[in-house]
Length: 387
Image 1: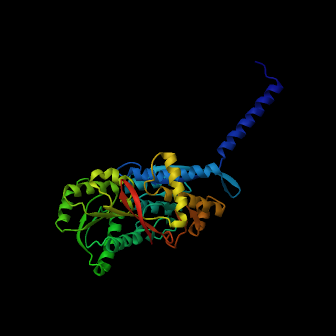
Image 2: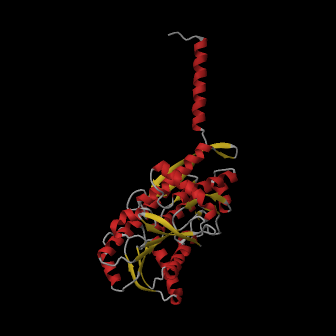
Image 3: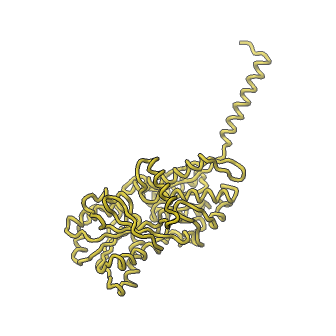
């Protein structure tokens, strides 16, 4: 084959164009945001719900186009599974730091968010949890830690007030799963009952402990039954709450059963089966919207169901809002560099589907609200929104 000057010039030109195209592809501006939740194990349905919310935010942002400092960026979600295990959580956190993510949404539970937060803090990477409610998470005073739901200092007392005043609970048994979340919530609930219960004639008649993987609660429930309670408060997740409900019925005391956001998912009726009766379970989601914001939440839930074919479990809209809040801070700072947008995030005022989001000095959401639910005909029903 003979090479003419024209042929060589054409080949050089094509090579140049190809190289330029490759360079453009390589130079595409990317924002890497990590997401960590338990997408395996007994609470995988809740972890996947969180991840689904994050993916909806990423897809929406990329469809619209993300402009920061005059440049167009593509948002990429790096999703990790911590299985609800603290050790796996720190491994996942280090993996995201090594991948040079610019921010992290998660972790899902308090027991995983707290140990992981030190790793993000040391790396200077902002972290917003949409579901971990333990006060200990923000009490560390790391300037990189934020949460866009109410914490247990709000949730536990609110549930206690509702139990005593609205449910007229007098003899209350308390069980927790010894996790940072479960114990923290139960402690806050118990403190409020002990401090204010005299006015309503309410008291705690039994305190029991289990673990977050328990399936046989017979011994605990037998001990509780002997104290003749009219309500059980459980600090833990739905994977343990469901067998507890079934075994309560088997033991012949299907009394009122109350808990927090960990057992407030639409999966509870499915997991508990015939062990749960209408109106028996009262729970609270560490978030909620007031009447003026209900349409935005309803629209999100409809879009979620259209995309995934299932209902929102619990915190998908809060995960969505957490990621949107983080990206808005980047846009207002004019940079996705954590050092540059972190101060902006601390002062952000984001209008989300879950309400208006801003943070206090510790990183907790300001003016967080709580939603009280029960279950009827296998579906959650809202009873009240309170602060």
